[in-house]
Length: 226
Image 1 (cartoon, rainbow, N blue to C red):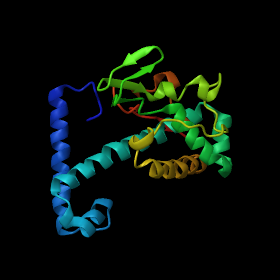
Image 2: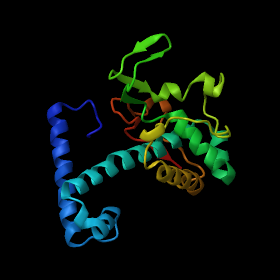
Image 3: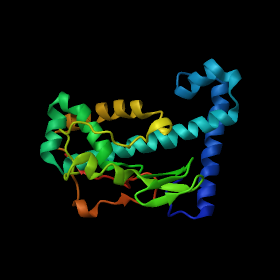
């Protein structure tokens, strides 16, 4: 709900307040009994060095940046492969394809499609003058489809030698969780396809409901059959 831009400001505030309250209650429980969860590990090992608000922020970040992105990548990646049966078969049957397939899906889908940055110096780009301090919006999706990077064919190709895509950002702003995301995708996609070898869409592609008014591209649902 927090990433659904169709919601009103009042709904967004209420959703954020509810999530903050949930995380605050979780942190309070972990202070008493840390357990073996990730947040629990932080509390158990560094509890005196972090405040409740820091732990709440940590939990919120894990939920939004860690769960939302990876879960949508799994769903969208599954859909993309279902629409390309030969490439699906390669991911399902050939372990050597897994790494290139994951990198290609990350590039092809670019689920966080744009980011904002401030120019730190005056610069010129493609004939445009940009002053230091100006706000820029960069299209990760466009960069990951760049013909100079890919040639004329930017379509999905799980056999493509991995190219330097920007799905996780670049430089000091790269996603800290990118290696965990890769591990999850490398495990989830082949396992799903092998567990359900007859997996197929349960309705026509044109009827699938995409989540487009959101900073994270994804699906409202992915009805499947097998």
